[in-house]
Image 1 (tube, rainbow over the protein chains, first blue to last red):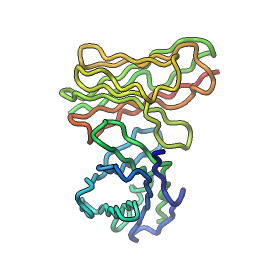
Image 2: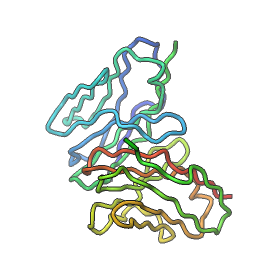
Image 3: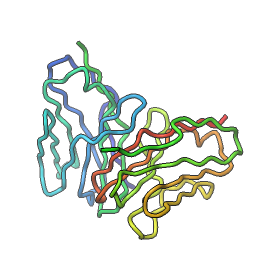
Image 4: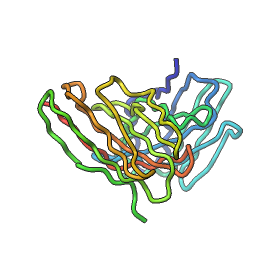
Amino acid sequence: GESVGLHLPTLSVQEGDNSIINCAYSNSASDYFIWYKQESGKGPQFIIDIRSNMDKRQGQRVTVLLNKTVKHLSLQIAATQPGDSAVYFCAENSGNTGKLIFGQGTTLQVKP
Amino acid sequence: GAGVSQSPSNKVTEKGKDVELRCDPISGHTALYWYRQSLGQGLEFLIYFQGNSAPDKSGLPSDRFSAERTGGSVSTLTIQRTQQEDSAVYLCASSRRSYEQYFGPGTRLTVT
């Protein structure tokens, strides 16, 4: 069945360092992937997305990498800041169904 | 502009009672989604509305759950005869297309 998972439930990094959050997915038909950031008590906030015809996409301080061969997705955050502390979810969508399948989330803790 | 809004923000109800959760999507967004998030977990898809098409109800966990969207805008998620396992945060999202979904703050439902 479909599943999206993250490798580590918690990631702790030093302020200023780069963070890499990983995600594995199982549905090879998925053609769209998205990363969300969720702070405590709030709804998920869109960070960045990527379509399956790309392998890399950059935003402001964030980069998403997609490796379709091994069905792996990663989110890189440059110069991590305390405000980046949150739970990060990857999600996939296949066939424009509108239904996002979410992973369990990785908690990013930024140490000052 | 205004984002997705949900009401109430918190709802405590007794087991067996019915509850209604409301979602006001972003103006102009034709697609609306409901998800459920249990404590410390990822988001679980419930239902998806796209324009005037029949909704995708494939994620509703039981026939106690239903949702409607009136006039292509506001949506109400109804849970009948609530059970303790229904306790969760219910999140609504809307999008202009099927991909970039923007989430509301959620309604935290507690069934006692």
